[in-house]
Image 1 (spheres, rainbow, N blue to C red):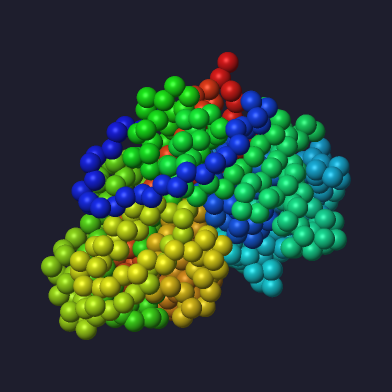
Image 2: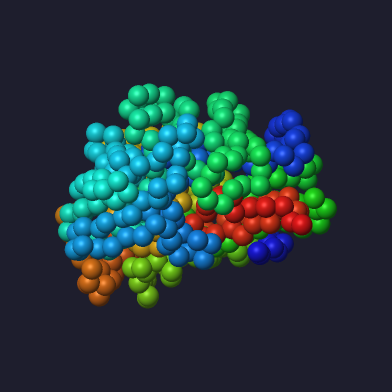
Length: 502
C-alpha cells in the first residue's frame, strides 16, 4: 500500500476544482460498507458498458469465467481448468457448485449463452471488439464448454477474465432492459436496489461458493464532487472513495479517520482527435496538438508526479509495448505555426469530457491548445451521454475528447484494436493498413510477428496523431483507516478481498 505524498505546486495557475458539498446520511456503523463513486453506473449489465463506475459495482454481482489474482496472474473462477485442442479451440471445465442468486444452478449452458450473447453483433456490446475473434461457444458436456475462435487468438484468456456469466433463464425471461435494472448473478454480493442518481445497494451472498465478503451490506453512492468525497471520508460517512487527485489526497495525510491508497494502473490518459472533422482532418493540426501539450508539466504540476508521462497507448507491462517510440516533442511555437499554416487559428472546437475524468487535466489541455491558437470549448456531459457519443458513427463523435483507457488484459490488442480498428464502435479513423496490422497481430501466436505489427501501429499513432497518449494513470483511493485492502493495476474493487483490520 502506498501513501500519496504532498504534490508539487501546480505550474498551471488558475485551475481550481469547484466544490459544492452534498449532504449525505452517515454510514450505518460497520455493518454497511459505503463506497463513493464519481457517477452512478451507466449499466449493471456486465456485457453492456465497461466504464469504471459500472465495473466497480457489477464486478461484485457476477462471477467471470476466469479472473486475476492480486498479483495479476490469470486464475480459475467459474472455469476450474482449460486446455487447447487446437489453436482455435479451447475446452473449459465448469464448476458444479455455483448457484445464481435466485437459487438456480449455474450450468455450462449459462456460460455458453454468456459468450454467445456478447459476441452477437445485434446485442451491440461496446466490448464486442475484445471478443469478436470468438465465433462460438457450446456446452459440450454437463460441466464443459468449448470456445472456438476465428484463427489463433493469443489474447483469448486475458480477455475472458472480463467475461461475466449471466443466467440464461433470467435474461431470456425478463429481457435486456429489465435485467439491467435488476441484475441476478452468482457473485459474492446480491443486487438489492438502484435509486437512480443516488445509490446502488447490495447485500452479501451468504451462499457464495468462494471467499465470502465481510460486509453484510454495501452501498455505492454517486458523489460527483471529489471534495465532497473527501469530506465524507473525514466525517466517517464513507468507507472508500474513488477518483481522488493528489491535492485532495493530501488533505487526508493527517486525518485520524482516513488514509490514501494508490497504485499505477494499466489505464492510459489520452486525447482523441477526430480526423473526419475540421480542423483535425489536417495532419498539421493534429501534430500541433501533440506539440502543444506539455505532458511533463501536467504530470508534475497537476498529478503530483505520481503518474508517468506516456509515449504510447500502453505501459511496459503490456505485451506489445514498444521501446523507443518517439512522439513530437513539446514545442509551443511550432504548434502555433502549424495551426496558422493550416488556416485553423481561432478555429472553434468542442472538447468532450465527463465528470469521471480529472477536470484539471481537461482544463490544462484546453488552455494549452488555446495558447497554440485554437479556440477550445469544454463540453461536459454525464458519463452515459459521453459514452454514447464516443461510440457513435465517426462523423458524430466529438472533434476532440479526453479519455482514459484500460483493457485490464495487459495486451495492447485490448487497447489498440478497439480504439483504431475501423470495425470498432470506438474508432473514428479508418486505415486499411492499420486494420491489416491489427488483424495480423490478433490472428497469430507468433510473438515476434505480433510485436513487429504493434511497433508499426504505435509508430503510426506517434506520427499521424489520431491519439495523443498523455500519461500512465495512477488511481488514488481514500479509505477508512481500518480498511485492509490492496488496490490492483486492473482497478477491480473486489469487495470479498477487503476486510477490517483486526
